[in-house]
Structure formats: C-alpha cells, structure tokens
Length: 136
Image (tube, rainbow, N blue to C red):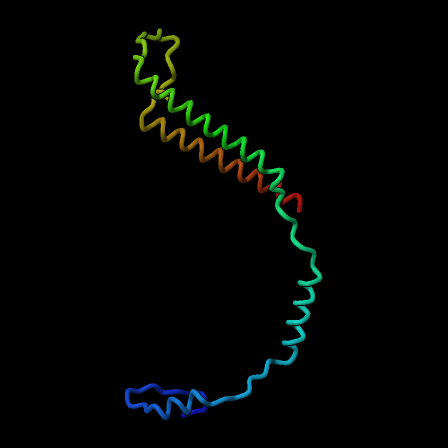
C-alpha cells in the first residue's frame, strides 16, 4: 500500500485508519503562489469602490409606478364589475364596416398574432444586438 493510498475494507482495523489519518506532512504552496495571491489582494485594495445605486433618484419613479399600477388594477376591477351590471346593447354592424376575419378571434387569429409577436420580438432583439455590437 502506497503512502497516500487507503484501501477501505471491512477488515480494516482502527489502528490502521488512525495511522493513515494521523500522518502529517508539511504542505508547501507552489513557487509564486503567495506572491500572486498578495498581488491580487493589492490590486483589489487599490481598485475604486463600486458605484452605489442612486436610490434617491429611483425611489420617486418606483413610488409613481406603484401608484399607477394600483390605479390601473382598481380601474380594471371597477370596469369588470360595471360590465357585469349593465348589459351591452345589441346592434348589427353593416357588412361594409365588419371587422376583418383576423380580428374575430379563434385559433387561427391567435396563431397569427402569436407569430407576429414572435417575429417582432426577433427583429427588435437582432436590431438592438446589432446596435450594441457597433458601440464596442
């Protein structure tokens, strides 16, 4: 059995395990390790501190956004509640003013709108990546 090889068997005695685990050998770092670590510590200490986030400027925007979101939610709830109370008037639309079949609803129009949204997203991402890569 080698110096660092430990063979674990069911017959291993406690003395053998204690002997292997009690073996103390001096561990030395490789040459240049301490110097490279200290250089990295000095570089980090000399680096300027990170720029703090401007919470004072962002807080009013967050508050106004929260209030606007709450107002939109309340308006939506009120509109849904009033929609249930009042029956919508029924009228027939002349055939010349009829909506195109794309806006009628159904599975086909949902698939078309989804495809259009995916294409628009792809085009906008590619365009923004092209703009961002030009600034490097």
